[in-house]
Image (cartoon, rainbow, N blue to C red; front, side, top):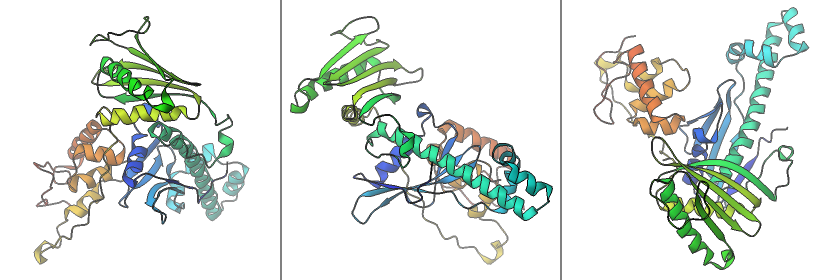
Length: 369
């Protein structure tokens, strides 16, 4: 596959909603695998990383001159010598061929670094291609079914035939979903383009049922319109809410039926996109002459080693974000953020990762060098 550095998509959607939909794709139910994101300081920009290979570029949502929202994929950053050396063992084992062996034997240090850098960058581009294909595939679930792909060779199956399975978490019980979908299907069938829509709601092992017990679990739904069919099994989740196991079969416009169902779930408050936070504005900190040698909060988080999302987590903690807001930005769960903050506080001390009573951090009185 060849990378298209200028590949971009235009959509009639707000910047905030598109960015929120992209973040929603990183929910564990959609199997992001080793792909992770962190929210950049730049508005509506996500830095994408691979757990194994590091930086694989950025996803940028911006407003075009035509007023539409543009989705752009920026390539990874160039490979610095220290980065190439850090990945030497991995690159040598999985990427390099005879070229590396010759360079190594001849002790051409500069050539070795160049070879490492080229091989690592090529691997990062490959992972970015795989990420783009995965992301565009997941975005269909959230209403973006016509974005296409920059890599035509990946999609060898006919695009006008759909056979897609995915899971979709919602609030509410399976029984409540069954009642809701029956009423909604009745409303849809009253519209001209959906007059022949059929909806069947049943319990396991039974045919269509008119009465749905409040504790029904699971609930099976089948919707048919012309050549399109949607099958949904609603299962109660252990914590709260339900998991919809969805199967779409038919022509490409079967996505339009699913879009209407998802929009109705959103109106009812049973589904919501992640909250997108605007990047915090930089606050100028005035330091008295006698305080010059004391580190300010803006500097303290730099004392945390830049491993994974640790430094970003502490930085957002100093900016006053809650654990939930930090989780949204770095692509982790709220519980993971809380545990990570407690662990970092234990490792580096309360002066580096302080407790707080509100959303604002007080400046530490004394910070060790």
